[in-house]
Image 1 (tube, rainbow, N blue to C red):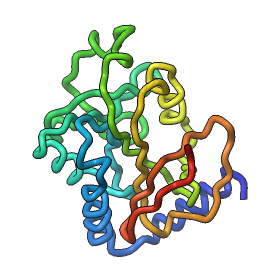
Image 2: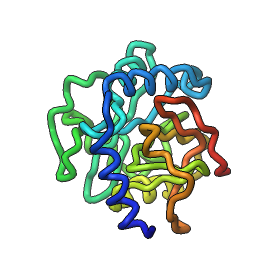
Image 3: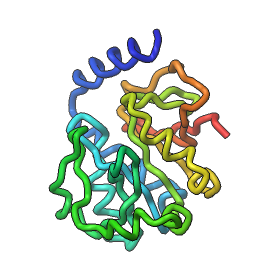
Image 4: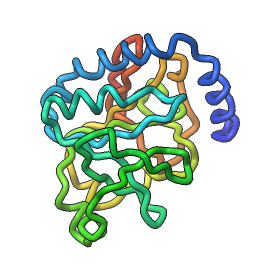
Length: 197
């Protein structure tokens, strides 16, 4: 299957997933048990939509454990990590139907040295699906691939962790050279150490 066909296949599989609440609880349990997460001081995490592996309880756990949490904000078609101190202020929904932070220092995050100055120990990435080599298939906009390829970000040392329901973890995905994979995949059935460098 090509990317378009695989996306359609994964979207149908995702719609059919049952017992989401229980599966999300297991994903959270597996995620917060990871050494990489326990020792991380600063985590960049996606804000989940209804059909994705939920991140709200994870973000709340991070905040209660005094970790810095950054979430995505799309500005001028570019994804920028913005620090939040609560989930309560995420009322704004962007054109993709994803919650975003409302109150932030726009001048500061648009400065030339902002991306260089932020610390990130772990990035939690969304996807339609992952494969056992750590490759991810996103939604086709390329926001995370472009963000991770930026020289200010690529020069940092951090772990990339993908969250997904086990039904969306495939043997192999169609990928291209610019596609960014993950080091670890967390699902409700456990943790997969991916094979990317």
